[in-house]
Figure 1 (cartoon, rainbow, N blue to C red):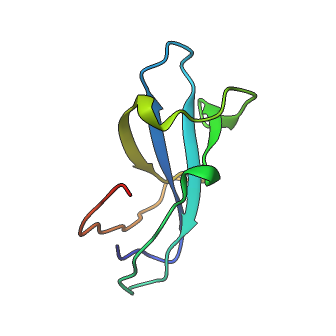
Figure 2 (cartoon, one colour):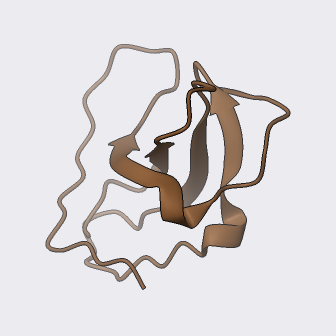
Length: 87
């Protein structure tokens, strides 16, 4: 991916009914393509963007993912993704 030097988050949604998502953050280097690896052990439970107590991520129940950026300010951002792969 190629970013703008900001930190982004990868969020995983699971099929469980507890409405918890799992989040791991990563940094980008401005205008430079890079391979970003996010180990599953780096994901922590969140609800509405806030860290919460919750069960550990069950990788078998992941049903969707998303890339997020948020800092509470209205501004432009840039994140280009060439490919995504789960390992």
